[in-house]
Each structure stands twice: as C-alpha cells, then as structure tokens.
Length: 241
Image 1 (cartoon, one colour):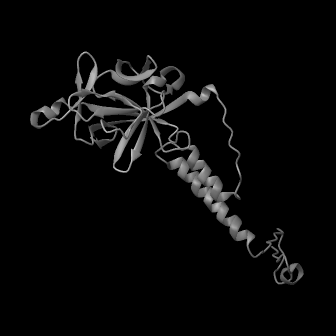
Image 2 (tube, rainbow, N blue to C red):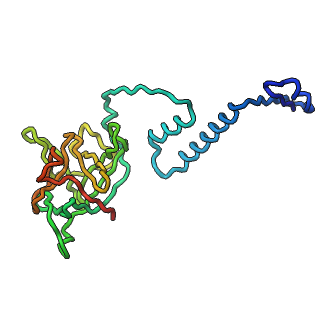
C-alpha cells in the first residue's frame, strides 16, 4: 500500500512498503475536511428522513441543500397549475376557543354560531373547534397555516360564501376528509395566523376578510375586512384538549 502527499509525491511514497493494492491518499489543507463534513451531513440527513415521525417538507430539504452544497441563487417564478390547489391533509386538532373578550362560541339552530359569555354549568354550551390542518405549511411565503374549521361532534363546517359581493360566514353540513382541492372546496379553507398569544382566521377565498365576533354579546359570528375596527374582535385564544 502506498501513500503520498499531493505536494511531495516521491518523498512520502518511499517511506512505506508497497503491497499488491496501490492506494494513494492526497493530502490538502482544506478540501478533505470540508468534503468529510459534507458526507457526514448527508448521512445524518438521510437517517433523519428515514426515522422522522413527521412528514418531510420542502423546507427541510432546502435546509439540507443549503448546508451541504455551495450557496445557490434560485429564481422563483409563479405559475398557475391544477396541482397548486391541492392541500394535503396532515392532522386534526380539537381545541376550546374564546375571543379576547372571553366570549365563547355557541351553536344555535338552525345553523349559526353566536358569541356569548358563559359561566358555571353554561360553559358546557361552548362548542369545541375542530381544526383540520393541511400542508403546504407555509402559504405564499408567510406563516399562514391552511386549516378547515368544523364543530366537534357535528357535521357543520365553517365556510365563506359571497352574497351580493360580500363574504358571509355560514355553517354547512359536509364531510371533508383527506386532501382538499381549493378550486372545488376553497370556501371551507381558512388561514390560521398566530399573532403572539392570539390567533386569527383569514378566509382563503376572500383574502383580507377575517372571522370576527362583535363587542356586543350574543351576536352572530361574522366576517370583517377591518380587523382593527372598534366594534369587532378578530383575535382568539385557543387551548388544546
């Protein structure tokens, strides 16, 4: 076996006995360490992908590429394709919900949600919100999480429909399972936006319109495009079960 340094091939070569296998090891100042580091990162990343209990996202892959490869400049182009409207189901989360005025949401016949203050035994009237969370996790370059909202133990889903040019919040009986096609069921899709301690829900079909309650109790839950208005509340506290 023969070893030689790249800058002194003959001097180092004569210091070892030759064998049937001729192996040369080139020694440089920086490249081997850098290449070895890349190889280790690739192995770690591969094992992480294999053993990760969650879905491996595009952001995870980009982190690996940015670490292993040299910096690469990407040009981002926007295209409208049918596949872009598909949101892949991830998981369901059931939680209690109150607005920042501590009003709970109550289901009333025939099919509407009303915000009111509840105490004692009346707290049982408060609905539990079921959030079906979808991917992609990051929507349009922001931290908006695509979700479908329904009432736990009911088939009523919150939807946003246009009536006379204005979005209206309503409850629809539906059975949404698995992946969601925004082009067909976009009225059921909302963006969950976390803001410090509170959460907002923006309509995907009508950007800029948020689910709101009135500052007056026992008013129906609705929509507003003026989230800072003095008569509406758009921020909610969520607590998982």
